[in-house]
Amino acid sequence: MSRVCSVCNKTQLSGNKVSHSNRKYRKSWGVNVQKVRVVKENGATESVYVCTKCLKSGKVSRA
Image (cartoon, rainbow, N blue to C red):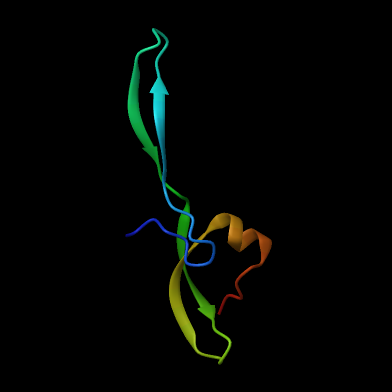
């Protein structure tokens, strides 16, 4: 599953995870995407990956 939102094109973030002793190592944070069926403009339905922020804000119309 590719962790990319099909509405806002949100992808994973990367950065440093810092321990208590201040040691740093690279870490990546994925996007919370869900596979939902959406209705397109022409009335057809399609299964796409959408992040939960776009789902809550109503940017897609679910089938």
